[in-house]
Length: 173
Image 1 (tube, helix red, strand yellow):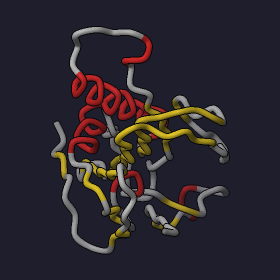
Image 2 (tube, rainbow, N blue to C red; image 1 turned 180 degrees about the vertical axis):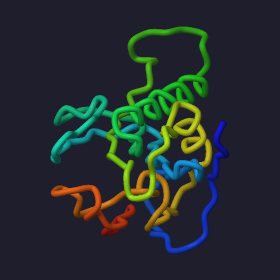
Image 3 (cartoon, helix red, strand yellow; image 1 turned 90 degrees about the vertical axis):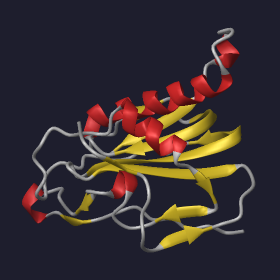
Image 4 (cartoon, rainbow, N blue to C red; image 1 turned 60 degrees about the vertical axis):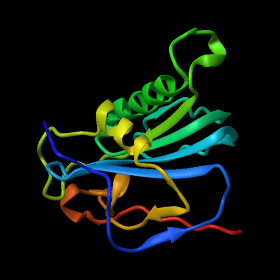
């Protein structure tokens, strides 16, 4: 089983948004990872899905979510979304299960294979759970971390033309 990393040094976006925590988890052996944005009370959202082969869970244009999980691993990485939902469900307890008790988690994946990565390690449910459990308010690591750990850009013509990418963010307070 791959080793899970949830703490990172380097550049980070800091913010003050009450009720929002961000967690990041990676498998260095991939390398691959996932990033979770968790909201204390949940939030309404609108999505704009683009790309050559998008893979999403509960992200069909509008909705409500307690968390968003972004992961590498292509379609296999969608398993990380289930890990986040399962962890949120465990937090509230299993005393009842009404439709309102199922945690709403939206997610999306990127293709992070290639560019020196050809193994089958991908963000699974355990990694999604680890990202949620490591979530902290006010801090979002940017660069080659989480879902952006092995992200690439510029590979539309061929994988060999890809260059290292990462994850980034901007905030207006």
